[in-house]
Structures are given as C-alpha cells and as structure tokens.
Image (tube, rainbow, N blue to C red; front, side, top):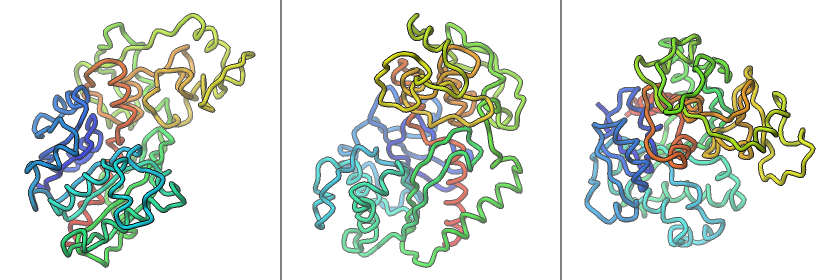
Length: 366
C-alpha cells in the first residue's frame, strides 16, 4: 500500500480522498488541537502530530524515503508579496515559513510525488513572481542535494468533479527526478478510468442533489441517516446516526432581512444601507445550481450566498460538509467556530479522490 504523509492536514479532507483510493496515510501534521481531534477520530490509523510545522521540521519525525507521497497545502497567508527577487529572499522571509518547512520536509523525505493545494490567486500574486519562485525552488538541484522535481500546475474547478460548489483551487504536483511525464495525458486517462468504475462521478451536481434528503435540523444535531435519493447522496450515504446537523439561531433583525430575499437575490434587494465586503451577502441559494465556495462563514448570512432556497436560515455544518463531499459518517468535533473552519478550509474529499487516482497513475510510470 502506497504510504502518504499529510501536512497541514486540517480536518482530513485530503486524507479521506486518498484513503478511499487505497493509499495509507501514515502520518499527519496539524497545528490546531481542536481540528486535530476531528482528524484523529476519523482517521484512527494515522499518527497525528499536533504541533507547528516549524517545530516538526526541527525534529527527527520524518526520515528519507519513508513515504512515496506528500500531500497538503501551506495556507496562503504564508506567502508574502515580496522577496522573490533574490535567491534567499523568498525562503528567508519569515512570513513564508509555512512553505519553507513544507519544502524542508519534502527535501528530507524525498517522496516520489508531492501535491500542494492552494488558492488560485497564488498564480497572480506579485505578478506571478511568487508562483514562479515556488516552481524554481522545487526544481533547484542545489537546494535538493542533486535531485529535482518536475512540476505540473492546474486550476481545478470542483463542479467539474461532481462536487456541488463553484470552488476553484490551484494544484501543484511535483515528480522526483523524472523529466518526461505527460501530465495532461495521465490526467485524461485518470478521468477515463474513473468513468469506467463510476459513470456518474463527473456529473453536474446541484444543491438539491446534495442535501434535499436531509430532514430539518435538530437541537442536538443528531439525525438518522436519510434514504439517499440521488447518485451524489448515494455516494456519501452511511447507515446509522449523522451528526453536526444544527442550525444557527439568527437574530430577529436577520430573520426579517432574510424573509425579504428571493431565490438568487442578495442584500441589494433590501432597502437598507448594508455595508458588506462580500458581494453575495445575504444571498439566497438556488436548488438547481451548485453553491458558491463553502467558506468558514457558511452559517453567516452576511458572509455570502449561504441562505437556503426555502428556509430563512443558513447551511448547517452537515449540509456544508455534504456540499464539500464529506461522507455522512464523518463527524466534526469542537466548537462552532472550529467546525466551520474545519469544513470551510477542507480539500473536498471527492476532488482528493480524483487527485489520488491521478498520483497513482503517475507512480505507475516509475
């Protein structure tokens, strides 16, 4: 079984997809203890290291050749807008320490393949300079003791992988000491293979396809698993109890505002001077479309288009997890703020499953 290390593991979205594809996640790193609890309880076979990656980097926790794959994305806050102009500027800038330590662990382990996930804005940051520097660092034989990675990057749209949200992310894949990898051809071959085993995998999925079988939220958030009606619901269905289906109790003022907003509309429908930094603030979703990107504020009306089409409330954590493609038996632990963060920041497991199959096909080229 191919062994994988998950850095910046979060609640475990990346790991979930890789496990489903048959990979073994041997170790994971997560700084936030409450988020790590969710990972540990859903992935009991993985050794979780709850610590800052800069501390982990200084230990002997990782060794050469212990895993064939490293996954994870340093949070985008770690990238500064300057410093890429000279050899040590980018790596020496303390604001980039998350990326630096990710690189150091890749250098130490030397996996055959690594995969980084990040915001697509990374491509345009500092006029593309930051992105080019990242490519350069992983290709630099001097930095990697004579080795180098051939890199492939692609912006992926969640909707194209049968996930009901308009989420876009940048994927960077590095392959060790192998120059002639036809990434584009392997990508298409991966799609073809998945379609053979699951012809509906890449179907367009709407909000209704994802959550319409869920009953009304409960006070304790626990419900019995409802019978799946759509292919997407069948994919995520697990018998037994489902957790985290609690609605947020909105204030009277907020409820009054929501009652005036029709499907597809937002705060502009209100005859109020609402100062919002989000263009979709107080937006009401549509059943027959995917959602906007699930963020850490999916339960906040002013945080975006997260109000249900037929109820004056925002998404529950369970509904948001469904939209993110987490299986129904995946339980999130911690307070509301932590759970929202776990779900909003996760790599959708269904996308991770595709990427795992892509990586598997790359490894077969070795």
